[in-house]
Image: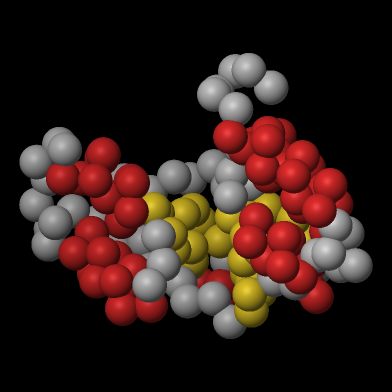
Length: 143
C-alpha cells in the first residue's frame, strides 16, 4: 500500500512571515499540533509545532504577535514521497522518532501528511505500526 492511500490530503500551510499568534490560532481552529510552513508554490520550508511555540516562543518571553513563524520553526524536515510504500514511511518515523511525516509529490510539493495513527488505522499492518511506535517512544539516542 502506498502512502497516498493512507495520508491526510489537503493540508493547510502557513507562510514563514505569519506570527506565532496566527500559528497558534490556526492550530486551535483546525485542531492540530503542527503545521507545515510553505513558501511559493507549496514548497515546504519547515514545520512549526505547538511545542515550538511554547519552548522557543512563550518560554523565551517572545511577543507572539511580532515573532514570526520562521524564527522558531523547525527547518529540518523529514518527508516521504506519496508513492512510497507505507512500510518506508513507518521506518522513517521510527528512525527519526516522529509521529507525523509530510508527504511530497514528484515536484517536491506538499500533498499531505501521514501520521502514526493513519498507518495504524488504514495501513492494516499491526507489526509495522508497533515497530514504528516502539522506535518513536524510545528515549533519544537509544534506538
